[in-house]
Amino acid sequence: MQGVTKIINLTNKLVEKNKSNLVHAFFWFFIASFVADQIINSFFHFPFFVVSALLLFPFLFIVTQYKNRNKQQLYVLVFSFFTLTILNSIVYVFDVKNISDLIFILLFVTIYYYYQENINSLSISNVYLFFGLSVILFSFTFIGIDSHYGIKTEYRSSFNNWANSTDVDLKNYSKGSSNTSLNESREKEEYSENNETQIWKPKPIHILKKLRIFHNGLFRVSHVASYFFGFLFLFFAYKSQKKKKILHLILLLVSIGFCIYTGSKTVLLAIVLSIIIFLVLKRSFIYSVIVLIIFTLLIYEREYILQITENTILYPYSVLVYISVENLTTVSRFQIWNSWWIEISEFGFWDFVLGKSFANVLLSNQRNLDLRIWFHNDFLNIFYTYGIGGILLYIWFFVKIYRDNKIEIRNNIFIFTFYFSMIISAFINGFYYYFPVFLLYLFFLMIKTEKQIVQ
Picture 1 (spheres, rainbow, N blue to C red):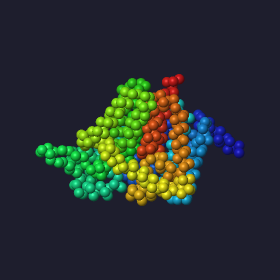
Picture 2: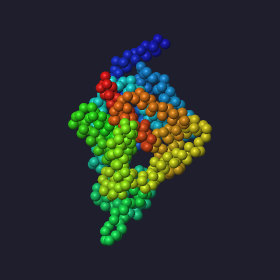
Picture 3: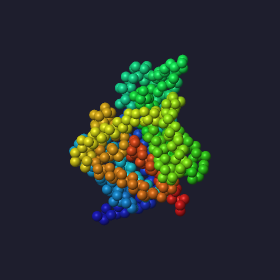
Picture 4: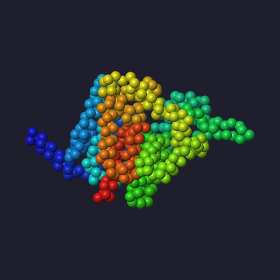
């Protein structure tokens, strides 16, 4: 017993002595694992990041609980999700995807507490490292290299049928190319003769939905690149607001430019909606009117905007506006969430208590949509996977983040936007699966700077 006590005391001393170095070491380890994962998966599928995180997590959890002011909270979060995963994997379907889903949730909640307790050890130099590596990974798209291409496997069958009837160069199109020859090979525009004048008409919605070009370089999917650059944009915008430097201005422009270029719309939409919420809450009448005018113009002139943005990086965004106005029910999210409702409608008592496992999420969408995907919504997915207890804990966790940092969130537009973008992203696509271990580092550095200004 004395030997165990000595080991614990020695460990505590080592942690205390090397606290700052440990924060950097964890960050670098996750960065190295992430980069290795992206490169490895460009050649063959292997969840390197998940395996690495799984091996490191016990140590991260122990170190986090050292002098943690909220030990009981983290215990409840970690062991609740862990227990629910074990139970629903036994009762329903076991799959390695259950483990990967669990580890991302546990990393999200644990790293939050870890950064919170070690906020003074966070360094902006790690952000520059994170930005630099992200740029390197993404830059491969500019030389025609993308780890996974724009049209996902699940959509190939229906797209092939369309391509065969319209002479589309599918091989080049699927690589996300946007050169002139490729655009010329797309479906011919629909024109009608009116007084010998050709009138442009938008393609049918079912075709517009398939014209989605994504860019991701060596990132496994474009969404991850979009999340990284979108939240990096908010971070550098905050830094530029506090101290106007050319460097920060350049970095924020590069970040938002790359975010737009990915073709993934989630983060940009989340940022725009978060800013609108901020303006409404702050009762900024003039800015609110400007936003309303812009939205009105986007809706009223949707066909013209669709036309002038075609063959540009803005096309996916104008397509979203057009489809949302013309027939909102055709948007993929509504179809996926309808699949969730179909499944939930058949839940029994124990399904609501335990959830039905992440593996069953994939199976249910395979059955309802012929797509082996998750629900693209953290809240719906966690409710289905972990039951009522899981979703209540997840919602409580976001409430906790707000309560812990209420003053900073309320008083700064970029911190406010960052926080609400996390929630909106979680709702319209997902957040905990998009490496919050890096994104929360940015969030807490902003909180750290804000606290220092107040002091």
